[in-house]
Image (spheres, rainbow, N blue to C red):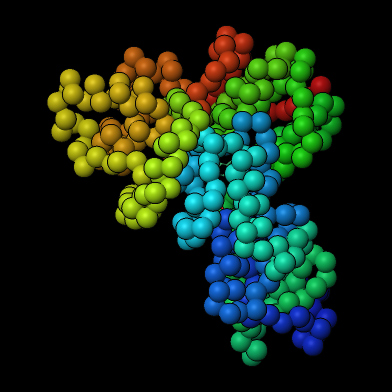
Length: 353
Ligand SMILES: Cc1cc2nc3c(=O)[nH]c(=O)nc-3n(C[C@H](O)[C@H](O)[C@H](O)COP(=O)(O)OP(=O)(O)OC[C@H]3O[C@@H](n4cnc5c(N)ncnc54)[C@H](O)[C@@H]3O)c2cc1C
């Protein structure tokens, strides 16, 4: 966001539209920021590149997209009305349900009226004299505000495809974070999935169910756990709603921000037979349970799930990573592994067809 760019787009201060606060992004962060700032009686304008709310859940419509922390934890806690009215159907909800939740919140709080959609902020600069932020949009509008909140998220700019030959590739190329809104069918197709980070891992088992052949290109293998996702029992949902105040308080004080218990015991302080039993039980229960079994699971190389996996007979089932920065729990491949061909530790040199 440079001055030069601003000079190209800034026709003069007088043309600027002035508000108290600008929020860039209509993901969960931006939606809440607009609501909160409005509550402070500020005149707020939200700006979003997409044409509706939801952020990553608006963009990432790829098959298999879902959250990997409990849906109940992956939801707003600031409004009891919202948490009482909304009911999650699965322990780990899929993208359509999470996007529906974002829409439900936007409707409930009437957020859209303060958002400018299909608009990208292309520059932002603080004017010392005016003591205001000056923003320019790709629509040519200049905006001024005392406060500017960049709720642009950590994952809203997808990596460009930098593989030789991609431009001349005759087949179809889809990107997880720019997935078409219309349904994509892979029936009878030969499909290659490049990358086995969090998105690749979610895509593979779903596409494997309908593709004629599936090739997975994996440069860096890591570990994954079975997610053991299941529908939320209505009685359990009711109990959660009754106890939200306590659950939210616990989550705020939890290392991961959720309601999974975290042990205070390091792995090797626990007798061998007991820790084997705990690991078996964690594996059986799935999701993030394994991460909370020992206090040093995320901190010590010796105790990390991947190094435990290498020493364990389970290692053949712990194979592909969730994004390293998110060290999360993983959906398990339901497809017959024999139908998936995987290349490992290879960097793709060139694409052609
Ligand atoms: C598939 C997937 C699964 C995930 N699962 C989990 C999970 O289980 N648990 C968890 O905690 N997190 C998860 N995440 C991480 C997720 O990014 C955060 O949980 C959260 O949704 C981020 O919200 P946000 O509002 O900060 O940003 P985003 O949701 O990224 O929203 C940012 C918005 O800003 C807009 N924007 C960016 N730049 C501009 C600009 N210059 N002008 C205008 N608009 C702009 C973008 O279009 C986007 O809509 C997941 C992410 C993905 C992609």
